[in-house]
Image 1 (tube, helix red, strand yellow):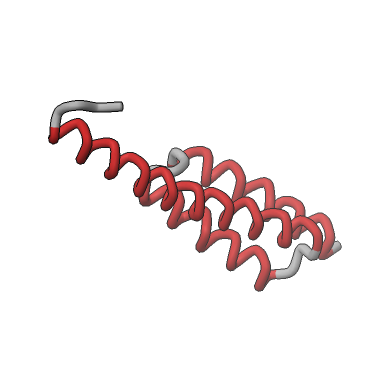
Image 2 (image 1 turned 180 degrees about the vertical axis):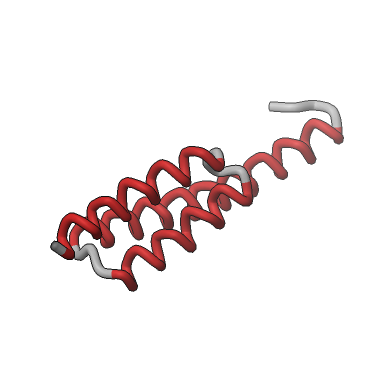
Length: 81
């Protein structure tokens, strides 16, 4: 437990940020699962939005978001045939 006032404030900030990051991480994971289960253009569009938001806020890296989206698009193309 921190003793210094600035360390206490930093701990509060870390907890708040961790909670927001968890929400964003869960959001993009859920949207990816939905897109995999039913690979439609709408589901993948929602997954793309969630991935881009997670990458923009630093929850995941930009290339990770790009890779996951690319794999979803390949899956969509495979089912469209």
